[in-house]
Amino acid sequence: MTVGEVDAARNGFDPHTILTSWDTGEVIWDGKGHLCREFVVEASDKDVEIAPGIIFPAWTYNGRIPGPTIRAMEGEQVRIIFRNRGSHPHSMHFHGIHSARMDGVPGAGDVLPGGEFVYEFEAKPFGCHLYHCHTVPLKRHIHKGLYGTFIVDPDPARHPEHEAAARSRLLGTPENRGWQEFVMVMNGFDTNFDDENEVYAVNTVAHAYSRRPIVIDRARPVRVYLVNVTEFDPLNSLHLHGNFFDYYDSGTTLTPTLKTVDIITQCQGQRGILEFTFKDHEPGHYMFHAHQSEFVELGWMSMFDVRGEIA
Ligand SMILES: [Cu+2]
Image 1 (cartoon, rainbow, N blue to C red):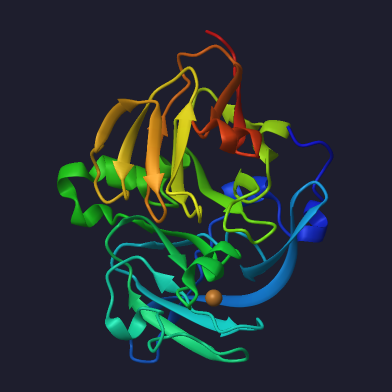
Image 2: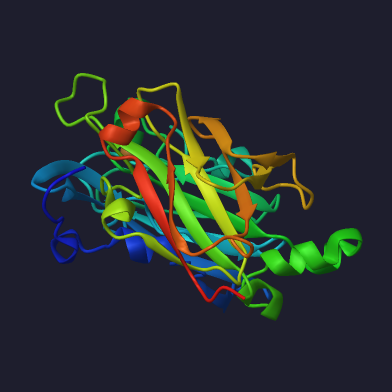
């Protein structure tokens, strides 16, 4: 494992906080008589400590990697005010259903340094999505840290056949509060610019969740929004120890697309939702990590600290 501590205060963010931080924006009137959920995102250059003593010259959304976890409900109008305070042109390209004008690609929402663009679209389809910079050269712009998770919660009223599942996914409901939800972005960092990663992580800081395990209440189920943005390697993966989970590919269904698996493999840009429980397990430290051993040694090793009384 890495030796020493990463200075979260200097980074301005802590991977443990990122796990459960949702940016739900602000609900405003859009000026045309409709309600709209508005977010503000700024790109900036920033040095980020990704492992003890290893400083990466990053580009960030809102000063953190991954950027804010933007969360809205299916059908809501979403407006993202994007300001580029960085030294290079950038954009926000959302995975979702929207018009070409709002796609955040060269010629449609890429923003020069000092500029601003407002992306506006309906939040759909429900699921676990992502956003990232789509300015060329793409692999450099993404890998520098310009990516984040975009969660669209299902609207239970639209899914009467799976209303209970939809309510459990919808932030703010009592059913949702029964769950322990975490966002995990699998990423890597090429510190010497040779097109290979020297450091791997979930939510940026190598070994953050093995040095300080994620505390789990065994009585409550766990839901992980898992996104792979790792550049330069074709695949990344998550393997859970001592347990199995159900998986919802892209999160766009309310019934699992894979049942009872203990590894999920994702290409870059792939993502999905994992659901599992430790209710019948004894308390203890349960590992989860990439099943590529190289990634494990270079930072992608994590631990759940399952707590609770045994009946
Ligand atoms: Cu960019």
